[in-house]
Length: 244
Ligand SMILES: NC(=O)c1ccc[n+]([C@@H]2O[C@H](COP(=O)([O-])OP(=O)(O)OC[C@H]3O[C@@H](n4cnc5c(N)ncnc54)[C@H](OP(=O)(O)O)[C@@H]3O)[C@@H](O)[C@H]2O)c1
Image 1: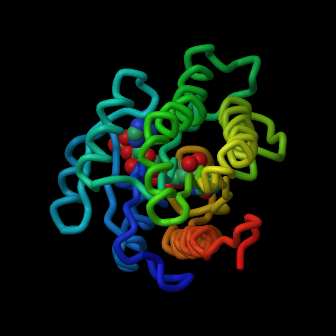
Image 2 (image 1 turned 135 degrees about the vertical axis):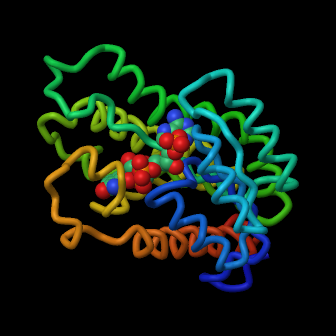
């Protein structure tokens, strides 16, 4: 149940990339609001360290860009949480580092950006769709939140691999949101803004951290958006299909 539009008591959340930056801040924000969270990252040591100090979280090691990791991850997430109300596709890669113009971008770096930022969220959403629709039937609604970027909209030179993958993810989200509306599963994409994280430091090494958003601020905004979307979905529906 979501008793109000800020509380996430008992909400079951799958979160990719929960060991750094926005993902780590969002993990803590969701736990503070009463959610139970299964998070995924590739490096086993940070996964174990983050999970060890958070009793309502489970950490899983996996690579969302790797096709063979997706179904085992989805099965573990659903099994450990007993279902999934919310999936946050947050894990991401820049592609070439340092950032490069498209003419200088290796095809392998482009493929990695697409596999991590677009195909991975597509595969994980598909793999969890049964759990999400079951949660929507049981509780009135479920949510997929895809983490986007202004690079999904603005054509920034040297951000081609990342920008193309995020533009694809944004459009995928809009189409899937329409297709899943009848099943009361919302698919949103949100841009957290420029944040002081390791990913941003890799992309723009000379940026002044003080000029960047704190990941905790973006995490609060994302948790508010998750709670508001679930709250709206879970309002009673009249016989005509209008929310009452
Ligand atoms: N930072 C910004 O200014 C900014 C701006 C706009 C949008 N965003 C978006 O915000 C999101 C979070 O970015 P961030 O800056 O917080 O990044 P970050 O600090 O680099 O954290 C990325 C997280 O994702 C995990 N990860 C990366 N690749 C993965 C993979 N293939 N499979 C599973 N986990 C993976 C990382 O752990 P492992 O390395 O151990 O896997 C880590 O936990 C991303 O979607 C990014 O595009 C960021």
